[in-house]
Structures are given as C-alpha cells and as structure tokens.
Length: 231
Picture 1: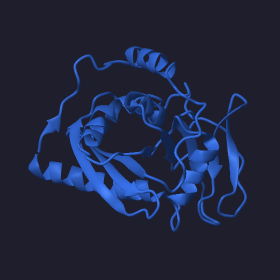
Picture 2: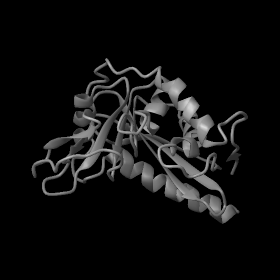
Picture 3: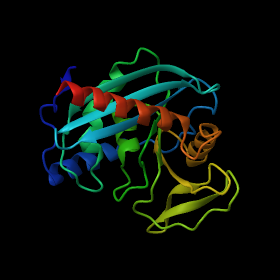
Picture 4: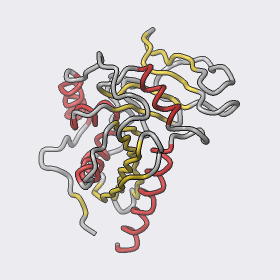
C-alpha cells in the first residue's frame, strides 16, 4: 500500500496553521442554499488514526442521495501531518482525505464530514476547509459538542436547538431519531444551515449517525487495519 506523504510546505506549527486558516476562511461561500436533498450524490468522509505508527487512514464513500445505496468508495493511508491541537485537527488529516477523494471516479456531490464547519473557534473547521479546497458544497455532522453552548432540542426526530458561539448561530443540535442524543450540524461551504439539517435528516433514516458517516467510519477502520498488517 502506498503511504501518502506530507505535502511540501504543509504547516508544521500552530502559528503557520492558523495563518492558513485565516487566509482560506476568506474564501468561504455562505450565501448558497446548496444541492437539493435526495438528488445526485453525497459523499461521507472519515478518518482513523494509529498515532504510534504515525498513520491516518481516510475513507470517501459516495452514496446515491435518493436511495442511500453505495455508488463507489475509496481509501488512502498517509502520514499524520500535524500534531494534535484542538481547533486545528483538519491539518492532521486533509492530505490523506484529499487523496481518497482523488481516487473516486464518480462525482462526489455534497461532502459530509464527521466534524465541524462554522461551529469552530475561528469559524473554519474541517468541513469548511475541505469545501474551500475542493470547491464543493460541504457540511459537518459531529457526534460530540465542541466550542459552543446549546439547549437540548425537543425529543422528536427533526427537533433542533441553535449552537451559539458569542451570540452567533454557528450550527444546530439536531435530533435525528426520537429520544436519541442529537448530532451537531454546521455549514461547511456553499450550503445553508437549513439545507445542511435537511440533508442530515434524510441521511439518517434509521440511526442517529448519517449513513454517509456510518459507511466511511467502517471503511477507514478497515483500511487502517490493512495498513497495520502490512507494517
């Protein structure tokens, strides 16, 4: 298996990474509704780490947005490209995620990341970063809260409550299944918050976590185990 190496010139410290975030965040597009729910393709992205071996495995799984059936999947394994720093996690995995995306022949359509977009200390999490770099519409759907306050949404599927950071709504805590913990949805790039939540509900017909993330999570874990077995 080919290991994706860290790109030349990739930020090596916190100051350099923050500078890149500031520059790229100026390219965010926040005034588009985004693709229609249930049309075209939607691609789940996720990663798994082996910090002892300095490896990260990324998976990209394309689903038919209407049927939620898998159209295509791809993986890549690379070197962990940045130390662990909260708020800068995108820099640990983006080169490998981009390599997985590049291996797809199908149009990825909407990108769905297991992480955050605008719900981030500098309003530029992984979903926003990938959206800007690829030019594609993107959303973040995270399992756990991060850098905001929120009230519990109502108990029914589709109920939501705003995620607030310094008084700004940066996302929503969204109940994808009745009586189950919410997920945390934020805009990445070229999608409205209402559309991001509508896509998330459509992608979560049976479980708390969207099908995109469920498929990508399983695939990146398998890819990492294969890489470990070769090491």
